[in-house]
Length: 136
Image (cartoon, rainbow, N blue to C red):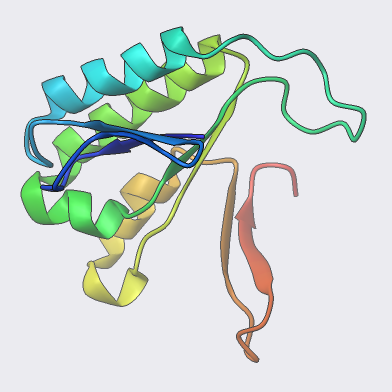
């Protein structure tokens, strides 16, 4: 597993199979994008999985909420779109997490427009419920 960390961390390197690469900071999208591209380029290409899962890397953008604290919605949109394109060229997929109560509806809708599916916790909170899908 590879992790690109845009937050200050004591050290980067290999920690039990998890390789962490430090980026300059969450507001420096150029450096963050370069680090993500480097990680993708260093990963060996995967062959198809028996369970029909993704053939390439799975990129998790752990917090769009944190990203939106450092850059405006327009820059975040362009950045996430570029990351998703890079991951897709490696045969992979991207998913992201956001705390909807922290953002206005326009920011949520703008970021959600990048993704094929949008899911929220179900009423009980134990499962995810698809609330938007391009496939419906």
